[in-house]
Image (tube, rainbow, N blue to C red; front, top):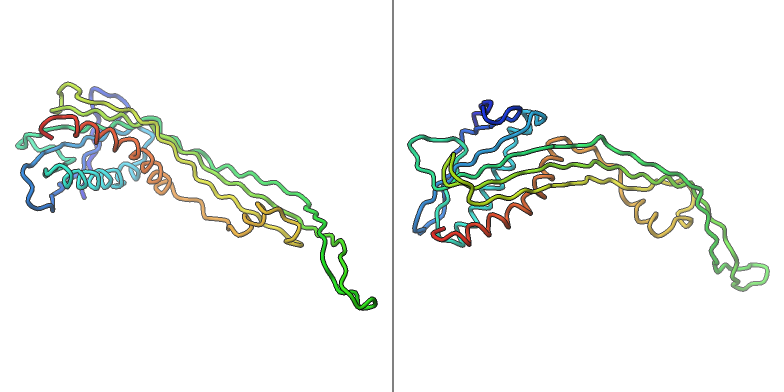
Length: 237
């Protein structure tokens, strides 16, 4: 996959990424072909690694493959403009305000105590009896998190510079969380929630690309219905 980067004259501080990518259809017995140019604009704070990340395009491919089955069309998507191709639509995606926070690490410690009644056997009395038993443990409760957000504007036009047929702005959010409990002492002193959290483990901090991928999944949850509404409403699609 070749990757080139060009500055858009009409949108300073924003870049347009072009992937040498053609998406052939594998569907059979479809009645018509529909050519769509996909344009993706990124702000300056998007690293080249995130811009090259293929996940956004892969999600589009998956989405339109499902649409082919429903609408009996071949949707040929391309992110590289070909002057010889008459595109039926242009999908413009502009990313704004990508934020991936520093990891937040909250820890709290407490001395947990619990008194429970147990049935024990009294050898001298040669009988069972109930007595109080004290339990204690040092509990460390850890909450780690990273907040991610991005705004994506989608505009659909019938050619590169044509009027906007449909638009949608999505404010995507994703929160990575890792919560767990460690303790030393008696597990009987822990609350039910602490006991459950003690089964969780400290996880490795996800990479920037991994966080970005999860963020895009949430973005697509809102973009897909907008695309469905457009293609179902527009006659001839």
